[in-house]
Length: 107
Image 1 (cartoon, helix red, strand yellow):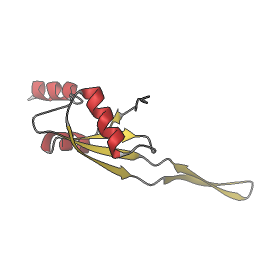
Image 2 (cartoon, one colour; image 1 turned 135 degrees about the vertical axis):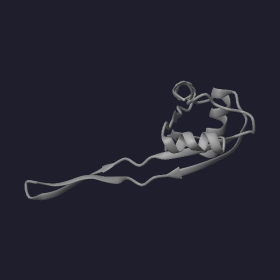
Image 3 (cartoon, helix red, strand yellow; image 1 turned 180 degrees about the vertical axis):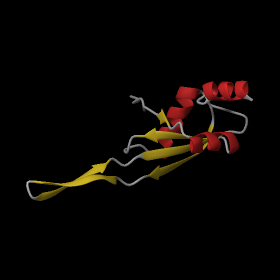
């Protein structure tokens, strides 16, 4: 019984640079995943060969702090777990395909 893993790609300038220079793609993943499940999900979803997967956790950050009825109340922004997926040489995932076409048109 295989559970599908929802992978959300991070579309940022840093993620775009990593995909161009090092053939590494960045995905937001749930907190209960590991490297093996991420690698198998990428292979199943995009039909590519994964060389390595590195996981990074970002800590929750304070969102706001205020006083309510004399008590100090704080809220936290949720932390994010990111997976840096490096693909085999010569293979690509077309995440930034639309932005590449627009960039070439403007040049």
